[in-house]
Structure formats: C-alpha cells, structure tokens
Length: 377
Image (cartoon, rainbow, N blue to C red; front, top):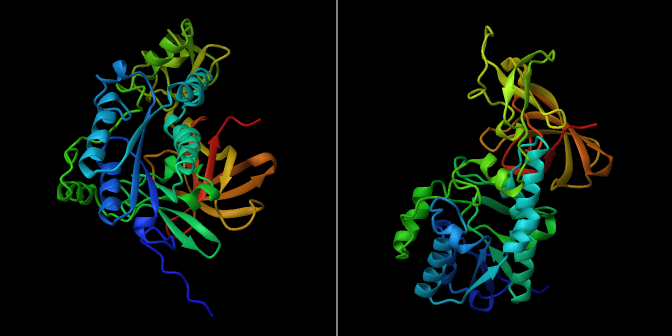
C-alpha cells in the first residue's frame, strides 16, 4: 500500500514552500500575526486587504476595521516580512451587499448584524474567489475559531478562548468554504498570546487596539447612519403599551431597538418600560415590562447546516441568540425551505428579528450552523 502523504501544518500534502496561502489582512494584530506565523514556517504567503469604503472618510475612524490607516498598516507588515500584498477596491460591492441591506433591515424594525453579512457575502465568497484566482491552496484569516477534521470532513468549532470566540459571526460558512479556509489563531487561549507573538515577530501593530465597532458605524450611532443613507426615513409616531394605550411620542422608530430601556422618555409605571416590539408600518414603538421580552419559540430562516447528514427532523442543540450570550439548551426543528423553529428550554429575553441564532452541539465545541431570526408568519 502506498504511504499516506505527509501533511503540512495546514493539513495539505505539500511542502510549505510549495503551498500558497492567501491571508486576509485587516491591518490589525490578529491577521498580521497569522501572516507572520505562516511566513516563518516557509509558506508562500500573499496578503490581501479589502478597501470597503472611502479612504478619506475612514482616516478618522481609528476604532473601526478596514479603514485607511489599517490598509497602510497591512501594507507595512507585508513589506517588513517580504511578501506580496494587494489592496482590492470592494467599496461598491460592500455597499450593495452589506450597507444597503443593513439600512433596509433597520428601517423594517430588525436589529441587523452587518459583520456576519460581510463575512458571508464579501470575505468568504468574493475574497475566497480572488484567492483561488491567485492559485492559492487555501485562505487564512485572523478569526478566533477552529477548523477541525471530523469523520465527514472539515468541521467548525468555537475558539479555545471563549472571550475571543467569533463563531457567532461565522455561522454562514459553508462546508465547501471550510475545506479552503484556515484559522491559525483558534487554538490560542488568550489575546495576550497573540500580542506576544506579534512582539516576537517584531510587528509594529503588536500594541494596536482591537477594532470594536462596525466599520461604517464607528461611533455606534446606527440611527445617524440610517438618516444619512435614507433621508426622510425618520418619521414621528406614538409610544404605546401592549394594550395600545398611548404613553408618549417619538421622533422615529429607527432610534429604538428591542430590549432598550433608557431614553424612552416615559414613566408612570410600577416597573421600568422596555421596548418589546417595533411597528414600523404603524410608526409605533411598543413597550412593556421586562417579562414581555421573554421568548421561547424563535423562528429562523436562511439556515446554514454544518451538522452531519441532511438538515431534517429534530435536534437537541445549544443556541446563541446574541453574540454576547452563552449558548443555551434548545430543540431545533427543521422546516421546509431552509427555515427552522428553535424552542428554547428556558425563555430568553430580547430575542430580536435580524439577529443570528447560532446552533452548537449539545456538548463540546462544534458549531452546527445557524440562521437569521425573523418575525415568522
């Protein structure tokens, strides 16, 4: 019998020098460390950075990713480590595939997560095709998530460091994409390890702060961005309780999110008011007690299934309905047309349309996929 080929550290049957790896470089410390690690191991590294919006506007956005300064930093890392680096103008694609949908979803009363759409539609689809066009054997990113080989092929697993885990934002990753992707930082147990590696490689970005905002909403003011994208979208209306009683007025539904407590400008109740629903067509903000935020049944669509076998029947899972929450036990029921119903074993508060619902195995770290929460029929 012929011997199995010896696999390199990326799981490919080739010498590192014969293995081309495209590294998606944001200009931050994570992707820079990935490039440095792979270059040190002798891989044929090619760096690619995406320009997602206007450089001039980006220069002042120090806390956001993919800004002009970040492109400069990525280029400097590539120059210092002596590997080719390309900047791709994806501004139009990003606007069409991410920003426009963000605006429409927000105006429809949803709470969108544009970073997931960016990973799905730009970084892991179009950028991956660029990597293939560059004859790459795989594409590596600085995401904190793990790719492990299972009995039926590549599997997605949450990161070793729960505080850095990015599985919530990567649930749409398909099986085919997993075959091509690599996540060299997923096994690290703290961000301090990453920064120590950056220091060891002499990277100028070793102490660069993490990006904390949506790149095109660097100050966290979603409503201001929507007003710029959709002039005239903010129309005044009523704030009502669950029975329809008028409690006050607002200057635009887009200023509110489900679960919001502060800034409502109403009182007169024995307990605090929370936003429990947004009636966009009626221009009403519906408020109620905290208990009204609790949900047990969560309708989900656009399901991406990464479990073994076809997506059908019932599955015992854990789910995460917000990126900041730990997975909780649930029953996942497959429905026709890529939809599903998630029954939470204990009610969760603030489950909002537009957020992702990510599925995990009942035990362990495997990510089984996920979908988008919606209002249902």
